[in-house]
Image 1 (cartoon, helix red, strand yellow):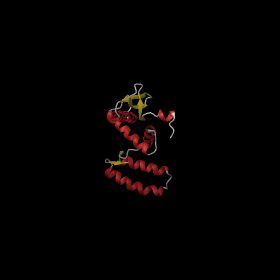
Image 2 (cartoon, rainbow, N blue to C red; image 1 turned 90 degrees about the horizontal axis):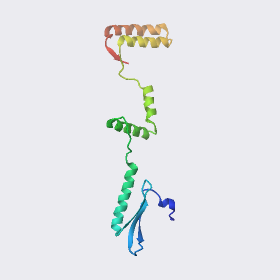
Image 3 (tube, rainbow, N blue to C red; image 1 turned 60 degrees about the horizontal axis):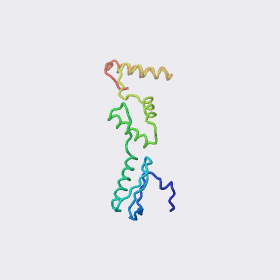
Image 4 (spheres, helix red, strand yellow; image 1 turned 30 degrees about the vertical axis):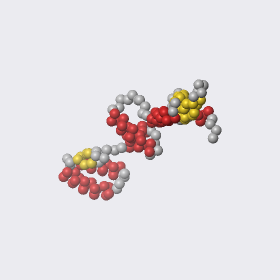
Length: 160
């Protein structure tokens, strides 16, 4: 495989080569590029020390890739963790915007424990059925039964 200049400049990739110094001594050179574009070229007397340095540089490059970024926010640490968790759930589902998900939630969510009195529930039910243009006969039977229910339990809340 022919090594081109672009393959040699891959960031975070390091290699060890034997190098002859002008003094005639053979050293082991660790060479490569850091993630931020800095050229690394260091000479070591033994191959073992060069391998250790190469591993150290590769570990640093790998850690930089996954390291968190400093962001100033008004969120508490718990809220940041919650937001990161929510975003990872959205990303797994194939969505990239947590704002769109929040807007959808606000538009479509209804409180399942919204409480109202039985009298108000009967009125809402009858208004809905009347608006649906139901026949008078269809409306009379539930109206009477619900009126009795409202009379008996009128002050107790129901869940809408």
